[in-house]
Length: 171
Image (cartoon, rainbow, N blue to C red; front, side):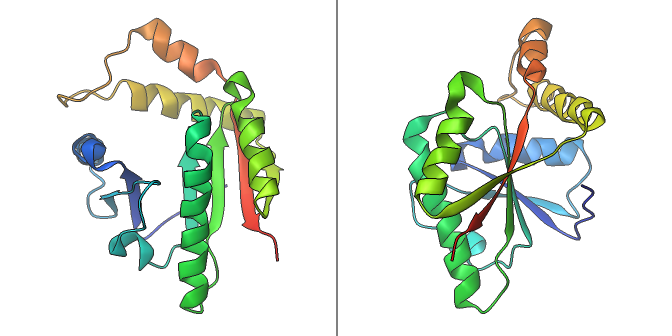
């Protein structure tokens, strides 16, 4: 899977936007990447709600079971907004490590909530790219909010073999 976006938005809770902005700056990606607040427990803010999204990519977002329903509600709101504007709904991919069976629990709840969940095959060579991305994200320097993890913690986080799930709304 190769994407060449003309523009991307990365999102997190408002209190994490400073760190996201630092990551964008360190990667010299400010011309094509922006940071935006997104709280799954709140209604979609206009900048997120009113944008036409081709893809929604999420990573490591299904660890806390209490947030499964808010995540699914946020995804549903994006689909509803696109449909309301007469647009094709965005493709939604979630990269997860099945820690404590949580990814499986999320997939089950998503299916019960009207989503079709399909696991996307990831080639072995792509796993190393995914693990490298985890290492880079965990060790990004230059911010007061940087994650301070030692090498063993980063390697442990990167050792999980991620699963890639595609979610689509069932008719």
